[in-house]
Length: 240
Image (cartoon, rainbow, N blue to C red; front, side, top):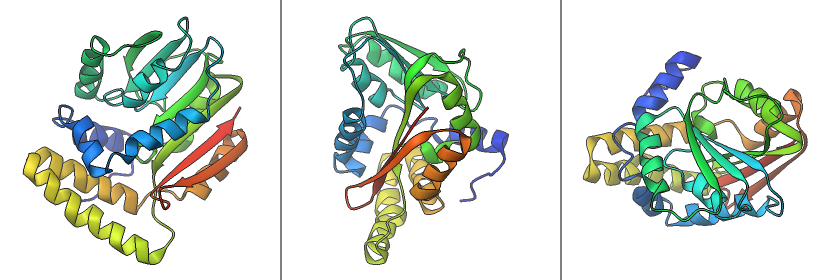
Protein backbone atom coordinates (compact mmCIF):
# COMPACT_ATOMS: atom_id res chain seq x y z
CA UNK A 1 0.00 0.00 0.00
CA UNK A 2 1.48 3.35 -1.07
CA UNK A 3 0.84 6.19 1.37
CA UNK A 4 0.53 9.59 -0.36
CA UNK A 5 3.05 12.28 0.61
CA UNK A 6 1.25 15.44 -0.61
CA UNK A 7 -0.86 17.32 1.92
CA UNK A 8 -4.19 17.13 0.08
CA UNK A 9 -3.63 13.54 -1.04
CA UNK A 10 -2.61 12.40 2.44
CA UNK A 11 -5.52 14.18 4.13
CA UNK A 12 -7.99 12.64 1.68
CA UNK A 13 -6.32 9.23 2.02
CA UNK A 14 -6.51 9.25 5.83
CA UNK A 15 -10.17 10.34 5.71
CA UNK A 16 -11.01 7.40 3.44
CA UNK A 17 -8.95 4.93 5.48
CA UNK A 18 -10.99 5.73 8.60
CA UNK A 19 -14.35 5.54 6.86
CA UNK A 20 -16.61 2.54 7.56
CA UNK A 21 -14.58 1.45 10.61
CA UNK A 22 -15.97 3.80 13.23
CA UNK A 23 -18.49 1.34 14.73
CA UNK A 24 -15.89 -1.27 15.67
CA UNK A 25 -13.00 1.14 16.29
CA UNK A 26 -13.00 1.22 20.09
CA UNK A 27 -13.47 -2.52 20.55
CA UNK A 28 -10.88 -3.48 17.95
CA UNK A 29 -8.35 -1.02 19.35
CA UNK A 30 -8.61 -2.74 22.73
CA UNK A 31 -8.17 -6.15 21.10
CA UNK A 32 -5.25 -5.09 18.90
CA UNK A 33 -3.36 -3.45 21.76
CA UNK A 34 -4.32 -6.04 24.40
CA UNK A 35 -6.01 -3.13 26.22
CA UNK A 36 -2.69 -1.31 26.60
CA UNK A 37 -4.29 1.67 24.84
CA UNK A 38 -6.06 2.43 28.12
CA UNK A 39 -2.71 2.51 29.93
CA UNK A 40 -1.21 4.76 27.27
CA UNK A 41 -4.07 7.27 27.59
CA UNK A 42 -3.68 7.30 31.35
CA UNK A 43 0.04 7.94 30.97
CA UNK A 44 -0.73 10.87 28.68
CA UNK A 45 -3.20 12.32 31.18
CA UNK A 46 -0.72 11.85 34.04
CA UNK A 47 1.45 14.57 32.47
CA UNK A 48 -1.33 17.15 32.79
CA UNK A 49 -2.45 19.45 35.60
CA UNK A 50 -6.23 19.35 35.96
CA UNK A 51 -6.46 21.55 39.06
CA UNK A 52 -7.61 24.70 37.24
CA UNK A 53 -10.30 25.73 34.75
CA UNK A 54 -8.98 25.52 31.18
CA UNK A 55 -9.61 24.65 27.54
CA UNK A 56 -8.04 21.58 25.92
CA UNK A 57 -7.84 20.68 22.23
CA UNK A 58 -7.66 17.00 21.26
CA UNK A 59 -6.43 16.65 17.67
CA UNK A 60 -7.32 13.69 15.43
CA UNK A 61 -9.80 12.73 18.13
CA UNK A 62 -11.47 9.93 16.17
CA UNK A 63 -14.30 8.46 18.24
CA UNK A 64 -13.34 10.59 21.23
CA UNK A 65 -11.42 8.13 23.42
CA UNK A 66 -8.89 10.74 24.58
CA UNK A 67 -11.44 13.56 24.42
CA UNK A 68 -13.80 11.92 26.89
CA UNK A 69 -10.94 10.70 29.10
CA UNK A 70 -9.90 14.35 29.37
CA UNK A 71 -13.47 15.50 30.05
CA UNK A 72 -13.69 13.21 33.06
CA UNK A 73 -10.59 14.76 34.66
CA UNK A 74 -11.00 18.50 34.20
CA UNK A 75 -12.87 20.95 36.41
CA UNK A 76 -16.62 21.48 35.67
CA UNK A 77 -16.19 24.90 34.00
CA UNK A 78 -13.53 23.67 31.59
CA UNK A 79 -14.00 22.92 27.88
CA UNK A 80 -12.60 20.01 25.86
CA UNK A 81 -12.71 20.24 22.06
CA UNK A 82 -12.21 17.18 19.87
CA UNK A 83 -11.13 17.84 16.28
CA UNK A 84 -11.00 15.40 13.37
CA UNK A 85 -11.33 15.42 9.57
CA UNK A 86 -13.45 12.24 9.42
CA UNK A 87 -17.21 12.81 9.52
CA UNK A 88 -18.05 9.17 10.42
CA UNK A 89 -15.57 9.20 13.31
CA UNK A 90 -16.97 12.49 14.63
CA UNK A 91 -20.51 11.16 14.34
CA UNK A 92 -19.53 8.18 16.47
CA UNK A 93 -17.88 10.53 18.97
CA UNK A 94 -20.97 12.75 19.19
CA UNK A 95 -23.25 9.76 19.79
CA UNK A 96 -21.10 8.82 22.78
CA UNK A 97 -21.64 12.33 24.14
CA UNK A 98 -25.11 11.33 25.32
CA UNK A 99 -23.89 8.10 26.90
CA UNK A 100 -20.72 9.31 28.60
CA UNK A 101 -20.57 11.14 31.91
CA UNK A 102 -18.36 14.17 31.42
CA UNK A 103 -17.34 16.65 34.05
CA UNK A 104 -17.34 19.59 31.65
CA UNK A 105 -18.55 20.84 28.28
CA UNK A 106 -17.39 18.74 25.30
CA UNK A 107 -17.56 19.93 21.69
CA UNK A 108 -16.45 18.41 18.37
CA UNK A 109 -15.18 20.21 15.27
CA UNK A 110 -14.52 18.86 11.78
CA UNK A 111 -11.32 20.41 10.42
CA UNK A 112 -7.71 19.61 9.53
CA UNK A 113 -5.13 20.13 12.26
CA UNK A 114 -2.75 21.90 9.89
CA UNK A 115 -5.23 24.82 9.60
CA UNK A 116 -6.94 25.17 12.97
CA UNK A 117 -10.14 27.29 13.03
CA UNK A 118 -9.34 28.85 16.42
CA UNK A 119 -7.86 32.12 17.60
CA UNK A 120 -4.35 32.23 19.05
CA UNK A 121 -3.47 31.52 22.70
CA UNK A 122 -6.72 29.73 23.51
CA UNK A 123 -5.85 26.23 24.82
CA UNK A 124 -3.80 25.15 27.83
CA UNK A 125 -3.09 21.75 26.27
CA UNK A 126 -3.10 20.25 22.78
CA UNK A 127 -3.18 16.44 22.75
CA UNK A 128 -2.84 13.74 20.10
CA UNK A 129 -3.68 10.11 20.88
CA UNK A 130 -2.25 7.39 18.61
CA UNK A 131 -2.54 9.59 15.52
CA UNK A 132 0.64 11.60 15.04
CA UNK A 133 1.58 9.42 12.04
CA UNK A 134 -1.63 10.42 10.25
CA UNK A 135 -0.95 14.12 9.79
CA UNK A 136 -0.20 15.18 6.24
CA UNK A 137 2.10 17.99 7.38
CA UNK A 138 3.43 17.59 10.91
CA UNK A 139 5.38 20.85 10.90
CA UNK A 140 2.24 22.81 9.98
CA UNK A 141 0.32 20.98 12.72
CA UNK A 142 3.06 21.75 15.28
CA UNK A 143 3.08 25.42 14.25
CA UNK A 144 -0.70 25.62 14.57
CA UNK A 145 -0.59 23.87 17.95
CA UNK A 146 2.02 26.37 19.13
CA UNK A 147 -0.15 29.25 17.91
CA UNK A 148 -3.34 28.19 19.70
CA UNK A 149 -1.60 27.28 22.97
CA UNK A 150 -1.59 29.73 25.85
CA UNK A 151 1.74 30.91 27.21
CA UNK A 152 3.47 27.93 28.90
CA UNK A 153 0.83 25.58 27.42
CA UNK A 154 1.79 22.01 26.51
CA UNK A 155 1.66 19.82 23.42
CA UNK A 156 1.39 16.10 24.28
CA UNK A 157 1.32 13.11 21.95
CA UNK A 158 1.42 9.35 22.46
CA UNK A 159 1.79 7.27 19.32
CA UNK A 160 3.08 4.02 17.85
CA UNK A 161 6.74 3.99 16.78
CA UNK A 162 9.23 1.51 15.39
CA UNK A 163 10.87 -0.58 18.09
CA UNK A 164 14.57 0.07 18.69
CA UNK A 165 15.38 -3.55 19.59
CA UNK A 166 15.90 -5.35 16.23
CA UNK A 167 14.71 -8.74 17.50
CA UNK A 168 11.57 -7.34 19.09
CA UNK A 169 10.96 -5.34 15.92
CA UNK A 170 10.99 -8.54 13.82
CA UNK A 171 8.33 -10.09 16.05
CA UNK A 172 6.32 -6.90 16.18
CA UNK A 173 6.51 -6.42 12.40
CA UNK A 174 5.09 -9.92 11.87
CA UNK A 175 2.26 -9.00 14.23
CA UNK A 176 1.60 -5.76 12.31
CA UNK A 177 1.68 -7.15 8.78
CA UNK A 178 0.19 -10.61 9.33
CA UNK A 179 -1.72 -11.00 12.61
CA UNK A 180 -3.55 -7.67 12.57
CA UNK A 181 -4.65 -7.78 8.90
CA UNK A 182 -5.93 -11.32 9.50
CA UNK A 183 -8.03 -10.03 12.40
CA UNK A 184 -9.23 -7.18 10.20
CA UNK A 185 -10.37 -9.54 7.44
CA UNK A 186 -12.52 -11.39 9.97
CA UNK A 187 -14.37 -8.14 10.69
CA UNK A 188 -14.68 -6.47 7.28
CA UNK A 189 -12.77 -5.55 4.14
CA UNK A 190 -12.59 -2.00 5.46
CA UNK A 191 -10.79 -3.07 8.60
CA UNK A 192 -8.33 -5.19 6.60
CA UNK A 193 -7.51 -2.04 4.62
CA UNK A 194 -7.22 0.15 7.70
CA UNK A 195 -4.98 -2.26 9.59
CA UNK A 196 -2.67 -2.60 6.61
CA UNK A 197 -2.41 1.19 6.60
CA UNK A 198 -1.63 1.12 10.33
CA UNK A 199 1.22 -1.33 9.77
CA UNK A 200 2.71 0.71 6.93
CA UNK A 201 2.35 3.98 8.81
CA UNK A 202 4.34 2.57 11.74
CA UNK A 203 6.96 1.17 9.38
CA UNK A 204 7.65 4.61 7.89
CA UNK A 205 6.89 6.67 11.01
CA UNK A 206 9.13 9.56 12.01
CA UNK A 207 11.47 8.54 14.87
CA UNK A 208 10.44 9.98 18.22
CA UNK A 209 13.80 11.70 18.68
CA UNK A 210 13.28 13.52 15.40
CA UNK A 211 9.79 14.59 16.48
CA UNK A 212 11.34 16.21 19.57
CA UNK A 213 13.90 18.02 17.40
CA UNK A 214 11.14 19.34 15.14
CA UNK A 215 9.20 20.57 18.18
CA UNK A 216 12.26 22.58 19.21
CA UNK A 217 12.69 23.93 15.68
CA UNK A 218 9.15 25.32 15.56
CA UNK A 219 9.51 26.98 18.98
CA UNK A 220 8.66 24.51 21.75
CA UNK A 221 10.90 24.13 24.79
CA UNK A 222 11.34 21.60 27.60
CA UNK A 223 10.70 18.76 25.16
CA UNK A 224 10.71 15.23 26.53
CA UNK A 225 10.45 11.67 25.25
CA UNK A 226 9.28 8.56 27.10
CA UNK A 227 9.09 5.10 25.55
CA UNK A 228 6.31 2.89 26.90
CA UNK A 229 5.47 -0.85 26.71
CA UNK A 230 8.86 -2.07 25.42
CA UNK A 231 9.03 0.94 23.12
CA UNK A 232 5.85 0.13 21.18
CA UNK A 233 4.64 3.70 21.74
CA UNK A 234 6.40 6.97 22.57
CA UNK A 235 5.08 9.86 24.61
CA UNK A 236 6.52 13.18 23.41
CA UNK A 237 5.86 16.56 24.98
CA UNK A 238 6.83 20.17 24.45
CA UNK A 239 5.96 23.43 26.20
CA UNK A 240 5.25 26.78 24.58
